[in-house]
Image 1 (cartoon, rainbow, N blue to C red):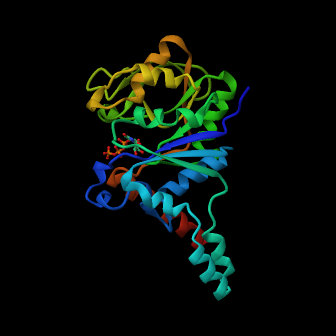
Image 2 (cartoon, rainbow, N blue to C red):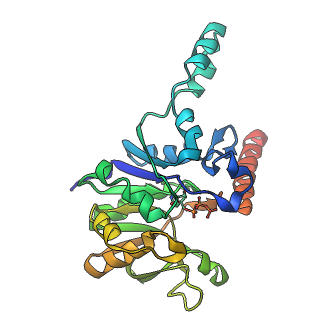
Length: 276
Ligand code: UTP
């Protein structure tokens, strides 16, 4: 069985919910303490055994490439000043990162499709960079990998969501297996009414490479975008797909509320450490 060593981070969206700041600052670069949000996503990937990353960017996301590049001037400056403890802070994460540009934000499905060559014949993970998960014991992605290792099929992260909020998510119909895992029978993108359950899709996935054949088959869906949900719906006709209600806490930094909440989380953690 092939293990999950590759991951795609789609980061080419316009971030319209966070305007006006996203005109100049991608939401993936929003600071959380002294690191940008996307660094926590890269750390989660490394923590879960990922070795190769493809980040899907756009013309407005060059800051992400700059951030993960070496800063030779900072290195020289800190070296000269003998500030070796700070040098460690600016070292790049130990992972191979590649980039591809999405010319126009025509959907999450279209962004993932750009990773077809990178993925080849391997199963792979997708981490949405606006969903930050704070782990309890294992990372959210690791929880998905555990389920993948049982079934060798695609796996989606799920979260129970209040009924009035389901219209903002992909929502699944699933049969409960054991612990927090489900076999998924159906999926609906942003149901306006009659949602099939209260289990919403959140931003971590594992796919077998067959997902690309479904992404290539579907037409543009909700919002005129190529929807990942529609490809998953096609996949469900021919293949098994599983869901896992992850134990990590999710913060959607694409909303003001989610962003404030994760800052609060970091601040109260810091206070706890100071009080010890
Ligand atoms: P979202 O819909 O949450 O992000 O897409 P968005 O489009 O950037 O933000 P809003 O809704 O306008 O505020 C989920 C993820 O998929 C990526 C986004 O960057 C985000 O990380 N995405 C979305 C792409 O990479 N390409 C797309 O065409 C659409």
